[in-house]
Amino acid sequence: MAGPTAGNDTTLKAKRILKAEMQRRGFTYKDLAEALRQRGAGPAANEANIRNQINRGGFGAGFFIECCLAMGSYVVRLGEPGQDE
Picture 1 (cartoon, rainbow, N blue to C red):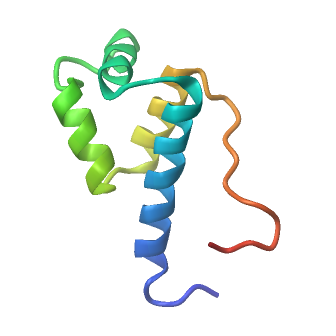
Picture 2 (picture 1 turned 45 degrees about the vertical axis):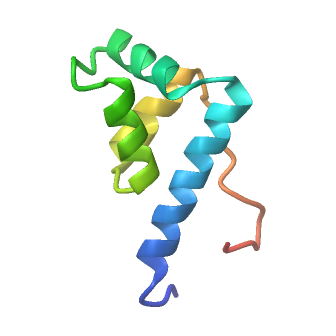
């Protein structure tokens, strides 16, 4: 079972995965913000807000999924079996 810092570790992992997907797909924060707006995210989805939200790492699963879908990432690798990092 996960220890008391598991939440922080998971938050950091989600941030790393999202940034890696952006890099893999050649998305900038500006590109991601535009893609999110096209999916109906509204005017709050601007480059500065998206950059801040991702860099802080304080985002929920819904934001993570919306970002992945906006980039066309339908399969995201979370890690290797037996690897908890």
